[in-house]
Length: 223
Image (cartoon, rainbow, N blue to C red; front, side, top):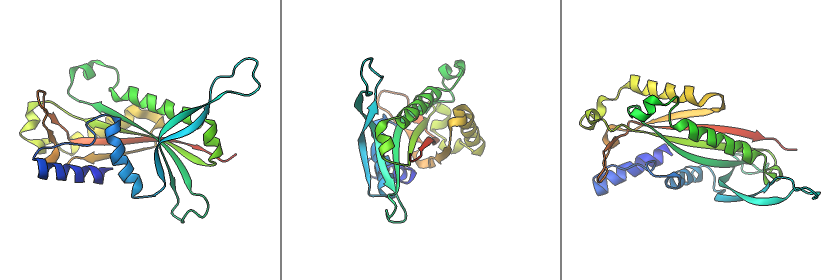
């Protein structure tokens, strides 16, 4: 996803002469970037994957009612050439944001992305219990959150190279500590200097030094 984002930024800068990121918009905007990343690993992938899930038991009925739910992505990964069926992965995407410098965040007990993370973890736990997942055998249920960091401080607009390793380490530590035990994987995209200033019409520009990718997952073994 990082390679895809860098290519997008490079193209946008060259053709349209302004900066943009595929992670600025909502979750739908991330789908294309994620799809491209998955396609580079395996040809077997689908978006908005349909799966059966149980609902609450109804009094007087022997069988638990079943209805259809959807998962953002499904893919099958097998480096051995699918001889043993591969590893099925169900993926939920979530986008969040954080500004180290906004007043509302300083007053809050936890960064704004924590609520989105908790929601994503609940989704992963919920998907693990779906009946259709049981039919897939051993699978991975993955939750991936992309956290968009920005500042509207004028100090950074003329000097995008002002951000240093200490700033990056601080951001990384804040996210890693906040997400807690459910966090299984985390990495950071240090946005190149040329693409850090995002201009908006009729709004404050954003200084975007980094994007963080955080993931949680559950394994559902074969019965």
